Structures are given as structure tokens and as C-alpha cells.
Image 1: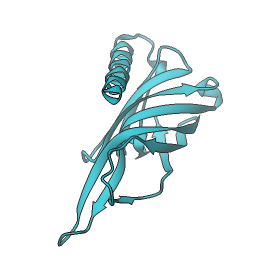
Image 2 (image 1 turned 45 degrees about the vertical axis):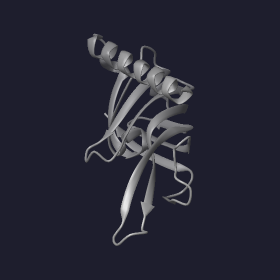
Image 3 (image 1 turned 180 degrees about the vertical axis):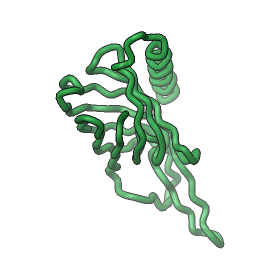
Image 4 (image 1 turned 135 degrees about the vertical axis):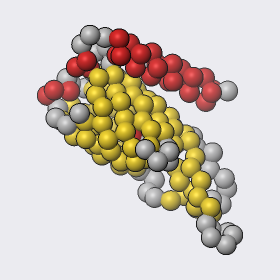
Length: 154
């Protein structure tokens, strides 16, 4: 139940901020990007919007439908100067491979991911630590425990 409440709250913040950003006359606080990693739906696009220059909400979706993410990011300094950030996302965080049958059957699992990042100019890079995904016991999780993300912002 707690997980459901967090997802609803996070989604509400994202949708509210994105809707407000679309109506705002000043688009300088809305950033579009493409990249790799959880904020970008694994391989895809991301939009980030905020009322202030230091707190933003974002959503990412994979171009091929591979994954998705919604989240919040707090910049420690104004973005224009280059800034470290702390972030929390909910979405596709884990790839599980099941080779127990002929061929393979890969699954994507959702969960939370928290981490640190750095944004300067058009570049966005960071590390995230996923948690809370429903990974079946004995499943073979693909990739490292700490996830990297790298993006280019417009």
C-alpha cells in the first residue's frame, strides 16, 4: 500500500509540473533530453520541468517501449552554473533474464531508484541505486547493482 501511495504522489507531482510547464510563458525551466539509463526509460527521451531552477520533476519513456520512469530531482545550485543533484525515480529499474527454457525470456521490473547526478550545459550524468523491485527469488538480474545514466539535454 505504501508503494502505491508513493507512486500516485510521484505521478501526480510529475503530471502537475509538466502541465504547468506547458502553460507557462517562460519555457526556460523545461528541458527535453535523450539518453541512456533509468531517467530516460533505459534508452529513450526525458522531459523535466520545474517552477524553480533547483527543484524539478521529470518523466522518461523509451522510444522502443522498453521502459519508463517518473521522478523528482533537486539541484544543489542553479543548473546554468553546473550543479550536483539528488534524485528519486520510480519506473523500470531492473532487467531479469530467465534462461531456464529454450531461448530466453527477459522481464523488466519496476521499482524505485535514488541517486546523485551532475548537470552542466547540455550534459546530464549520474548514478542510481535501485531498490524495491519485485525480483523473483533465484532470478538472474542483468547488469550492475549501481546504474549509470547519461543524457543530452536540449
